[in-house]
Every structure is written in C-alpha cells, then in structure tokens.
Image (cartoon, one colour):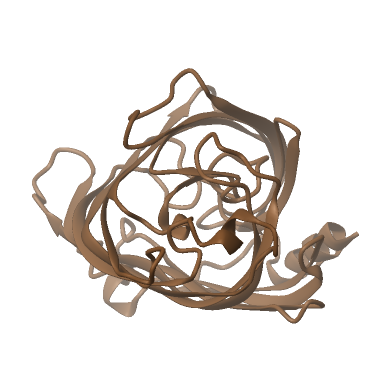
Length: 363
C-alpha cells in the first residue's frame, strides 16, 4: 500500500516527458515499521542538479543531495544529509554525509563468535567528507581523481542489554567513543551514467591512518587504528536491455578499532538480506552481482546475489566460513534524464531477510 502511494505520487511529480532542467526535486514520504523502532515516519527531499558553470556540457556529471528526517514511536530521531557533487566540468568531485542519529541497533558479536542479538541505544553526530580533484586528464578513457578524506563520529551508548556482551565492557567501544581521523585515496570513473550505468568501471580506493577513538578502550583510554578500503564496481551490457553489475569490496583494519568502526557486512548496500552489521570483524571481503532488466516503461526488475567473508588479525580472511545472500527487486525511474530509480529490494540470507525501500542503486 505504501509503495503504491509513493509510485502514484512520483508519477504526478514527474510527467511522462520531463523537460531537461538543471534542478530536479523529488519529495518522498518515509513510513516504515521495524521491531526496534515500531512505527517510523518522516520525509526526504532529493535534489538532482547541474551547476550553471557546467551549462552546455553534456559530459558534466549530475550532482545529488538528499535532506531527510524521521521520527519513531520509540522516540528515535534521524537527521541526515548525504551528498555527491561534481563541479567545474567534472574537475572536482566531493561526496559524504552529515547527520545526527538517536537510534537503536542490534549487536550480534564480533567475528564468528556470534551472540544472541542485543538491542542497544545510541546517539551520535556523524561527518564524512571526501574531496577529490581530477588528475592525469590525458587518460584515454575514464577520469582519475586524488584527494583527502575525513571522518568524525561521537558515539554515545545510552542503553545496552543488561546481560549482554556490550554491558561487560570487554568489547572495544562498548562504553562509547569519539572517532576522528583522516586519510586519502584515489577515485576512478569510466561509467557512462552515474545513477544507472550500463558500461564502465567505478573504483574508490582509500586509506585512513592513525584514526583516534577517544574513550574506546576497556578502561576509557584512547585507541588507534588504520583502515584500507577498496570499493570497485563494473557494468556490462549483456543485451540491448539487460545489464550485469558487479561489485567487489574489501576492508582491512589494523590496530584497535571500536566495534562500530569495524568492517561490516549487511544492510542496504552490502549483502542485502542481512541486518546492517550482522557480521563485523577487522577485515571483510565481498563479491556482489546484480542482473538489471526493464519491464514496462519506467518499471524495471533485478535479481541479485552476494558472497562475503570476514577476517581478523590472526587470519586475514576466513575463506572457509563464507556468508551468502540473494534476492530480487523492482525499480521505478523517477528521473528519466539521469535514470535515477526508486529501489525496492527483498533479500534473503541464512535465517535472515530484509526489505529495502530507498533511492538509487545499491552499487
């Protein structure tokens, strides 16, 4: 019922033959229900734009910014502004997120040492900023960027399960932590489109050195850790209408990171079908694939699958203990010019499932 009303509203906002414009606004009501939140409601506004400086440049990438807010029956609050910005004929690329969350999550333990799920409450502001400038403009194909990264997160646990593992304080970060740190990286993009590529590659490789997690230790001391991440996606047109998308993700952590900063599997983007953070450890590697086909006019469908593994300081990756998930979904194109989709997915894992409703592809 909710999805039907959302689609009808979008068809009203975007006529069949939308006139190309520099700014397109998509208002979207948010209504959902989960056991840990009960009823949640709010609104989001997504803006897709091109800057005046890029007028007349058909190769200029569109930028996107979303402002969202939600409140739940359990008095939880979510305020978030994710963004990605291309500027000056793709010379500069910036993406990240600014947000404030008062929320609850489930904790399932670290590594293969699973524990009965523990519900914990937390509040935190979050800032993630990645700023790049294009380099080597003479490359025969694609665009290569290099730049800096910064992250800040002040994680306050306000409630934990009385008999749970977090209550013991032995888990790094279970008493809260203030995380800050910076690094750098490179970004390569040869996609034909940003929001729905049919060919090309996008690769985001980064490192964060000497991250500081104040108060994360068992005695409240400051801990430090490094992280190295590679997120690569490739797109292959199989037929005139069918596209195969592949995603390769790795995350390696050294040092003593708080549990909320470990490598994660599960959620709306990585291994749909599992709760976000269902699996966490120092290291993670993931392979995902998705077949995308049109159905009728603005409506499309996908089938997807994923396989992931975790690792620790003692064993880089535990290849003998893989995690798998699969599922299917529908797509509704809300912006025809840039092929921006409303995404509805249902994923299945091992004694786990998840329903996802959001804007944009998983990868």
